[in-house]
Amino acid sequence: MSDDFRRKLQDYEEGKLSEEERVEIEKELEKMEAYQAHLDELLGKERAGTDNQAETRLEGEIIRRGKWKARLNTVLSVLVIFILVSWASNIFSSIYYGEGNPSRREIYSDVASFAIAVTHPNVSVFLNSNTNGFFNFELTGDMKKQVGDERYKIGDYSLSFRFGKPNIQQMTWSNDYQNNNYFKLPEETYEDMEQDWSTLEKLPEGTVAEAYVSLDRFFSTDEILKQLEGKNMDPVWFAVDAGLEENDLIGFPYNPMWHHDDLTITSYKEEKSGWFGKTVMQGGAYPPVEEYGSGDLRNENFIKTLRLMQDHSSITRRIAPFLNIEQVTQYVESNGVNIYGVVITGPTKELLKLKKEPWVRDIHMGEAHLWNWQDR
Image (tube, rainbow, N blue to C red):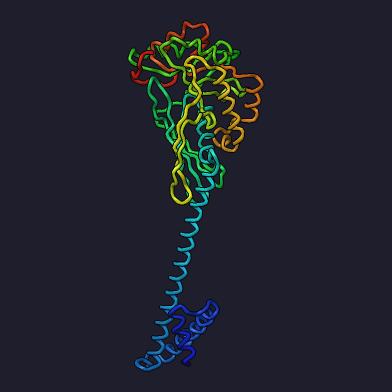
């Protein structure tokens, strides 16, 4: 073995060779391994104890150590690159979804929660956001509905984004949740109008219930609120005529779906959070709403929500595939907010009194729970 070759072997073991030199010497070593194996096969053990055998063992040890060191260097290099890329992607993801005022994360969260509130009667969700690396973003939260004075969890919700595009939606409903969404338009015929009234009559005194009330005509928002004023029950959701198919619903909750620009800021403070983040603390007030009035404000809030959903139609389609948001928005803007159904909750025996109201055409039972009510 020449001195030059020994030097290259030493450099190979210590990882000092260039990529081209490393490949060249590994080829030479493979040839020597093959040659040595052939000699061992011919000579058997006769070479044991000889200087050549010791030299071969040394060469083999150098080869093994060199190969493992090269593999370790490759693994470490890949690991370092992965960590750097992940770190950089987390930073860029936070910047991307946190950009703007309101930020993308706030807008996406609003659109998702509004779309659920608009298309699922008496269902609301407060969403938490989590930014992951590689421009991934996820919204998660509990879905709840109001029965009586309490809000009950009825399922889990999540919606993931990749590069700002909605990816996967998951709505996992509780085992005891029943989807009883059911209204009839004023001109539709009824087959059985007494079944759910009979169910209400059979429920005991100490219970509260949720009822889907179909109206005898189209009402304005102010008109239907005035009908409910003074009654020991709460309206929680209004079904709006939007030119949809019979089983497709759209409407708005009793409490307005406030947007960021609806808030009048009275105090504002920013604090730096991390390298690129910040924590914003602000105080303010939303417009005042009459308990059984403010119909124009409620209608404007609903239409404004539809327009926001239209501006982010990809998210809306992911949450409500049946909904042609452009067509619905145009229909409501052209025809006005005409209400044909309302979700009402309260004491079971109070809901039974609605049977005597001329504006109530029919009722469909939702969920019932034990008493949790404070009389109005």
